[in-house]
Length: 561
Image 1: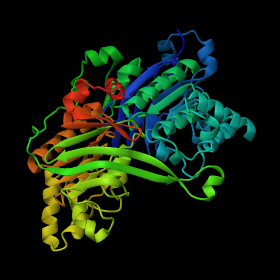
Image 2: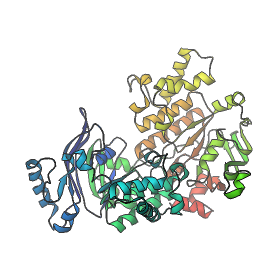
Image 3: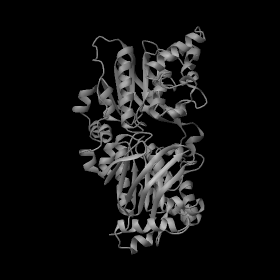
Image 4: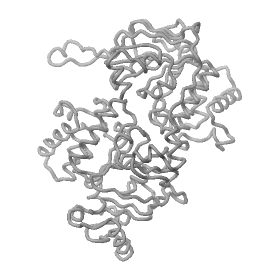
């Protein structure tokens, strides 16, 4: 039996006096796909990044035994024998020496000794490609830099390899896309670029940290299929970090379940997910969104209506025609829809379908053509005239860490809208409204000491999303535009946020304009569903009709994905 590629033994990761990873042990063979699952804060990402000491300020103990290529090819020894040998050598040799022939303890290596391993032997694909990629350089330049630094290629040779890598990762027109900047690519294309960059040095271990979280359902499947095919082509091991249990079931051979820094269960994927032995694993599996929304009223007044809504953007024309004017890209073409009081309209579609452009038009943040009214009032484009309408329509964005200012306290964040929309309130009146809004979303001083003076980074992802909801609720809106409000959250936190939104809808009679690519969220929240493809509305109907008996082939594809 060949040696494992990686053996993690009793790994601890500590920040000061706080243990984030506590005694984690596992092994990973070359060619194996291992999934690491758990809630936010369970220690998954910290553990994975600590393999090559990428976490600043972390104190590591334990062992991470890395088998070099020669040993994998030459040593027909059982893993348990190697482990015993390695443990002896681990105490007898200094940090820079091998524990056994061609076996390194990554925990004991210095920064300089880790340089050839980072990116070359162990490569990472991160969750959010828009922040992982440099916005000032083309994607081709960024991949070529890895090839030149790590593999010593010259510029021309590196660019030829860039085109090969982009083609292998399924990016169309690689020669043209290599010259694009990150913001000029779709979310799925940016994720493929990160995968191409990670594969540039032909690593033996690929760590994919939530690579599909922010993608729509069809793109999630495509990225998983891509990782699967590349793993088979290169024969590498893959460590998938994910809270998407559907993706884990589809991709991984084995699963490790982490809770508060501990591995509480591990085993074959099917065994763990079908017959979980630990209560925490069962809790994760039971965290699917549940439907608990008010029944639609037939006589409920319409609070938002659109007829023939059209959104377009100017784009440069190619060639000499660009000298005389700009072209036009139509993002939304002729959308018709209506939203009633106390109900939820769910908008589904792939990336690039026009969902976000539609949301921006609904919020009055970009110009649109056609008719769009909120309780009979349309956006005028004049700040003073639109002020009452802005209070009526509020938004909750996908990533609360980006949408909440890191320099403002909770009190400043939540009360900011009151100064604009309720200038007549004194300081005490504003404070009462802030505390009421925070209480409505489950954040109180009794649970969070010094709540009002805390900053966003002091809260978890789900708690930050509650802050974002409180910030929107404090001005007493009628309509909330929910732009992927749970896609960046783990399954248990997602369920909690959806339950909160359902409760608020019942209590306040709110109307939701819900944009999501998650069919489970649509099933739990929506009364009506609108399906978009390439800027066109292809199907509209009641949620049961759309999800159980879709008429259009595109809708069938989304639901089945």
